Image 1 (cartoon, helix red, strand yellow):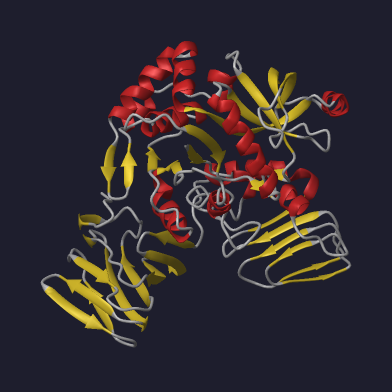
Image 2 (cartoon, one colour):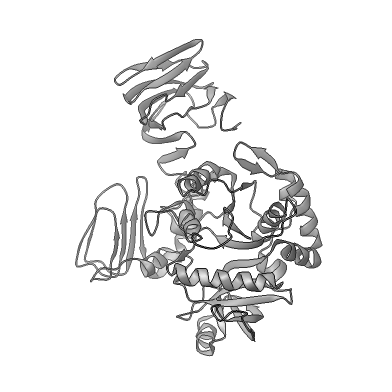
Length: 475
C-alpha cells in the first residue's frame, strides 16, 4: 500500500501579500479553484492501493487544513500537528512511525503541499515506478528534467541506470550525487550535460527502510523522533505531539539526514510540468498569459501593459504603460515589484516583522474554525468587525477583562449566551455584552450568520480572551 504524506508546514513569505504566516500559500487557490493542498491531494486520485493522505501541518493551520481535506473527500487521513518546525526529516520520521502502527509497512509517498504539477498522468507514472523501486528497498527521489539553467534549485546527478521490471515504468538511475544550488555558468553546464535534475523534494520509500537508514546515519534524531511519536495524543480530529519532545529533535532535511548518505538512493527523472511556485514570477511562468504576455487574476484593466502578473482581490486594479511588473492587491496591502526582483519580497516581510506590524501574519479577514472575522474600522478605544459564523457552529464560552461588545445581526439567526441569559436574535436585532460577562455566540440556522461587532475598551487585542469552554480545544 502507498501511504501519501503531505508536508504542509511552510509559511511562503515570497508570495506575500497573498501568503501570510497564518494563511500560507499551500492553503490558497493560486492556480485553480482548488488550493495547492487540495491539488496535491487531488492528483493522487486514480492511483491503485493508496491510503487517505496523512498531513503534517503547523498547529496554527489545523482547522483550515482539516476543512480543505474534508471538502476533497480526504478527511479520513491523520493530521499530525507540529508544535514547531524541525525541517522535513523529523516530520517524515514521525509519519513513518505512525504509518507502521498495526504491523504494516507501507511505501511512503512524501509530497510538499505547495507544488504545482500540470501533467498528472506523468506524475502518476512516476509514482508507479517509485513504488516498484521502493518495494526493492530503494529510497527514491524524483528529479525534475530541467528546461533552463536554474540557480534557485539544488540538483541531483543521475548515475548508473536501473532496469525497470516493467516496460511501462519510467527510467531510473542510482543517485551519483546531490549538488547545492549552482551559479549560472554551472547550471548551464548541468543543462547541457543531461544527467542532472532539479531536486523536487518528493520521495518514495518503505517506512521501515527510511527509519532504518535514519537510525544508521542519525541515531540522535531517530531516538528523539521515537520519543516524540510516543507522545502523540488525539485532540479532536488531530494528533498532537508533545512540544518539548518534538523541539528536542535535531532539525534537518531528508536530503542531508538520509538521502545524501545512503547507498540505496535512486532518482526518477520526471517531466510533469512541475513548479514549486516559489515566487510571483513562477506564477507568471505557469499562468495563462494573454496576447500581451500578461497573467491577470481578479478585477484588472490594462492599457499598453505587457509581461506582467496582475492580481486583484478586493478592488479594481488598472495598469497603464507598464512592463515586467508584479502587482498584487489585497484588502490591507499592495505589492508592486519588478518581476526580476520578486525574490526580495521576503526582505519586505522581514521589515514588516521588525516594525511589529500585523500584515506579515494575518489578512484583514481572519479564518477561524467556526467561520471568520474581518476588521472594518478601528480607532482609540474602539474597533469594528464583521463576523461570519458558519451554520451549526459555536464560538467558545468566554469573557474579556478589558472590552465590552455590541452585536448587531445583519443576516441569519444568532443564539446568544450572556451571563445567565440565553436569547435568540434575528436580522436588525442587537445585544450588548458588558465587560467581564461570560458570553457565547452560536449559529443554530442553516445559512451563515453575519453580524457587526463593535468593541470598546482600554485594550482590544485578540489575547484578551478567557475561554471557559471550547469545542475546538483552544486554551
